[in-house]
Structures are given as structure tokens and as C-alpha cells.
Length: 410
Image 1 (spheres, rainbow, N blue to C red):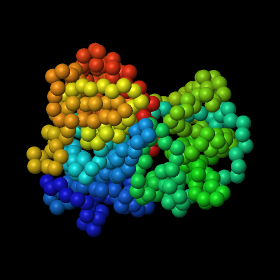
Image 2: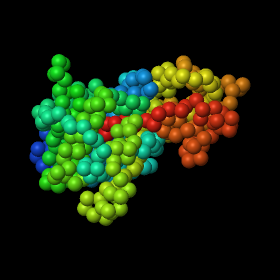
Image 3: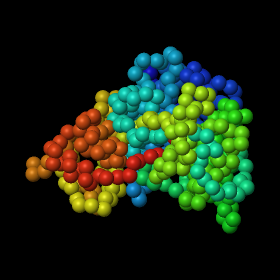
Image 4: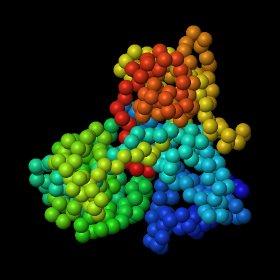
């Protein structure tokens, strides 16, 4: 078994076979989507008997931490053939890819999970809950009349991608840089279509929504993403959704960051009771289906600027990814002893100060604390994080961050 870079001339057929075996693609047109997705990513494969049997692709981007942009790599595909199941190669290859990304300067890594537990062994911890609201668009309490929108098709992928990158972003918002990723996502959408608005002077796509559906006549429609830069644009997009209500009975929308969608629905509990167990049931679905880990502690902390007092403490950090990596590799995780300073200016230096309190944590748990997924005291109950109660209380007061939400599935 050999780990190496993906070679499209040699590996395209093998990777397409893997994707078909796991159900990611079915038709010939899907292979074009796969090819475009790979063009926008860095991919490594595990070669067995001359053929790729496992592939991992990573894609560059950023995560917004308060007012800072942090370089991040997104693990946008881990695929294992039927031949290589339960071999352990997928986890080792993913660790190998992360080590390459860390050595190249990436500070964070994020991924979507098929279930909780598998990627924890590589140092990833759960992100925040995402809320998906399923509702009748007629129930939107929006009383404005939207302007006539422009129709958006997969051929508009460059403008769409620019609109996604320039959208309003809050704490935790992610942006994936290569435009091929948006192109592939638009191609992948079932009956995908978009509606939006262009700026009068710039000609740029200022705000839009992109939808998919398997039931064109009456829905449900899923809003895969929506972009906007101001309140008025957000409300205009909701008004567009409301305009579907003469034909579409149900829309599925991820709750936008900073918005409590229930505020904008008329009698949501009544609608849920009336539609319960029906084909067009109104409901709220909640799950934490993304995970995150720090790859470079010092760089991540140098971008951490909190408007509050400074706290200094020891951090004894464990990192499970070490057991999946070669001793000769360029990066072997970030386990170790550190002296942390967190406040208006933050840093991490190697060592230990006997005069300071000590926090002991896995990189999984510490990343969640740093990003604001959960407080120190809460993580001490449910994750691998321990420390004196006084230190936990100070960290609770210090790291009062907005709920981090990527606003971009990966």
C-alpha cells in the first residue's frame, strides 16, 4: 500500500469506480461533476496492487473568527472502495493529508461527518448545532413585494461563487476558495435552480438563493444556500420564497446565522400539529454534522483578539492524530505543554509555568472551547477537558463568543 498524490491520467477511472461503489455518483454526467470537484482540490490516494482504492481530497478556504480570517483546509471527500473497507487506510490517509496541509501553513481543518466518532480519532471535535426548518412558505410573515428576480443556472457558477464569497459573514462563517467547488455543487443539485439580483452599477450578483428538489410540482424545495449582504436583501429573498406558496407546500431552509427563523413564521406550532406525519410535515431538524480541529495552535491564537481581560494559564494538550502518522513526517500533531495567553492579544508558547493554573485537554475539546462551540465548564462535563474550577470560570467569562456557524456545507 502506497500513499501518493492523485494523478488524473492514471487514477480518474479508479476514483470514479470508488465513487460509484459508495453511491456518490450514478450516471455518466456525474463523473464530470466529480472531475470538476477534484480540479478544485488537492487529492491523495492509497494505491493497492497498482490501483487507487482510497482517496482523500482537501480544499482551501477560510473561517471567520470574530473579525479575523483564518486559513483553513476543508476535507471535502474521503472515499474507500469495497476492497479497502475496514483496512484502516482511510483514517491513515486522512491523517497524511492533514499533515501535508498543516505543513503548508493551514491553521484549521474542518469536515462533515457521516456519524460521530470516526474523525474524533484524528483530533476533530463537534461543531455547533445546525437548525433546518421545514415550513410552508405561505407562513412567512414577510409583507414586502420582491422585485422581478434574474434566473440563475449552472452556467452562472462564477458569479454565484463570487456572491458566496462576498456574502455577509458572521463568527464561524466558512468560505471555500476554489470556484470549481461551487460549480460542482450546482451540477450535483437535483433539478437545481436559482433566483437572485444583480447590482445596478457593479453588475455583480448581490444576493441570491440556490434550490434543489426531487418533486418539482409541489415540493419540498430545499434551499441549498442563500447569500446576502444586508437585511433588506435577506428579506427580499424570503419574499421570493413566499412567492412559491401558490404551488409549493413545503420549503426546507437552514436557519441563517444570527436569525431565529421562528420570529418570521406565522403560528409555527399550529402548522406543525396540523401537518404532523404528513408528506408535507412542518418541523425543525437539529444536528451537529460538522467538526473542526486546530492544526497550528500559535497561529490560531495570534488571530484571537477578545475585548476583555487577559488570562494566562498552562495547557497540557493531547492530540490523537499522532498515532496515525509516521515519525519522519513534517507534522505529527500539536500535543505538548504550552503557556497560553488569551485576551486582546493572544499567544501560545511551548513550556510550563509552575505559578499558573493548568488546563488539560484534547485538541478536540480545546478547539471547541476556542471557537465558542461550548464553554469550558460545559466541556468539562462531556468532553476531554479538565482544570481547576476557578480557571474554568474565568474561561467561561472570557470566551463568550457568538455561536459559530459555517453557513457553507462541506
